[in-house]
Image (cartoon, rainbow, N blue to C red):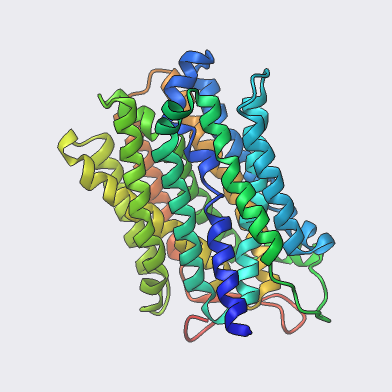
Length: 403
C-alpha cells in the first residue's frame, strides 16, 4: 500500500506540475501579436508578463495559512480551480480580462507551487530532493508545451484567445485526477505552523540567502518566459521560429532539472552545482542575444540546462535546508513569496527598457550582471546547513551529509 501510495503521489505531482508554467510561457510567443491586435504598448506587454509572477509571489505566503485552515490537499484543489478559471477568463472578449485572468492564474500557481514542496517532504521525506527534480522536470515540460504549441494552437483554433483558453483543459484534467486520488494526511499531534514560527524564520540569514537566490534566478526564468521570443524577433527571427527556439531551450531544462539534485548530492554541499548551472545560464544568454546567430542552438541548449538546473536546485534547497515538512512549508511560502515578488520586477523592467530604446545586447549584459550577483547568494545558500525547530527554538545546524 505504501508503494502504491507513493507511486500515485508521484503521478499526481507530475500532472499538477505540468500546469504551473503554461499560463506564463504560452503568452510569450504571442506577445508581438497581442501588441498589434490588442494595441498593447511595450510597457503594457511588460505588465502582462509581470502580473502572473507578481501575484504568484504575493499569494505564495498565503498557502501555509490556507493549508492550515482547510488542509494542503483541498487547498491545492482550490488552486487548480482558480487556475482553470483564470485561463478561461483571460481569453474572453471583455475589457481588461486578459490582465485579470493572468493575475488569477498567478495566484493559483503561487499557492500550488508553495504547497507541493511541503507535500513532497511529507509523503517521501527520504527522497524529497530527488523528487523535487522530477517535479521541476514536469514544470519545465509544461513550460515547453506552452511555448511550443502556443502559435500552432492559435492557427488551429483560429484566434489567440482560443489558444490561451485551451490550457484550462489541462488544469481541469489535473483537478479531476487530484480530487479522485489525492493523498490523505495522517492525523498528527504536532502543533500547526504559527506566525511566531514564520517570524523566527525571517530572522535567519539562511532564509534570506535562499530567498534572494530564488528571486534572482526566477527573474531570469520569467524574463525568458515573457520576453525571449520578442528579443529573438528583434534579432531577425520570425514569430514561429522564436517560439520554437524558446521551446527547445525549455525542453533542455528537462534533463538538468532531473539530474541537478543528483549532481548536488555528489559533493558536501550544493555550491559547485549552483555555480555550474548559473554559468551555463549566462553563456546561453550570451550566445542567444549577443553572439552571431550561428550559436542559436548551442545557446538555447545551455540556457535551458542552466535554468532547469538552477530552478530545480532552488526548489531542492527548500527541502534540504529544513528538518521537517512543517518548516519546509513555512520556508516555501516565505522564499517563494519574497523571491517571486522580486522576480516580477524582471519582466516589467525589460518592458520598460525596450520602450525606452534599449538594445537587445544591452539587456543581455544587464541580465548577465544579475547572474553574477546571484552567484554570491548561491555561495551562501549552497552551504550544507538546515533549519531545525525540534528543540523548541529555531536553530541553524550543520549537517554531515545531505538529508
